[in-house]
Image (cartoon, rainbow, N blue to C red; front, side):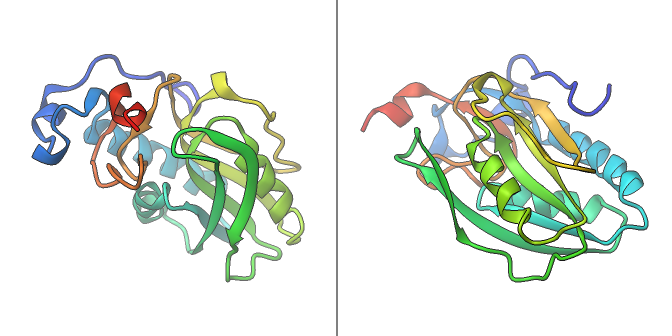
Length: 208
């Protein structure tokens, strides 16, 4: 199965449920992808990226903070010399709903001019943040701008994806329209440390 064609796993693996720490017991509706499934998919994506960017100056830019675990695992499996940095965006009006406007609050510190930039995202949903970043890096005279996202929610897309010449789009899993946490993704800065990706029960994020 090629990149961009992996569908969401059904149910929640028993081994992942057993690993739920006591502090989050009862918080998850289900586990969508186990740590083993994530690891396998990251390896597959890294292999394709290694092949397609061989011989090219590659800068891997993570979108903080959600992509930090995914990026750490990904860069260790990409068999190429790379430079890395992070960019920080702000787009959420409150804890669960996007304001519809994305702004860059912390830019990269490395010089990406002439490099092939691979942006690493935890999840792409509305496309608002991503479109802002495409325009942002378009001012930096990069050789190409590509995106590698662990999760993709095309059902929530508002802004169409337009990467420009030479741009590639890699996605790990197509995500259902659920509120997901784990493996770097959070609700109110919690759940980032979970090794799997799960659906948070609605009463957790609607109780306030």
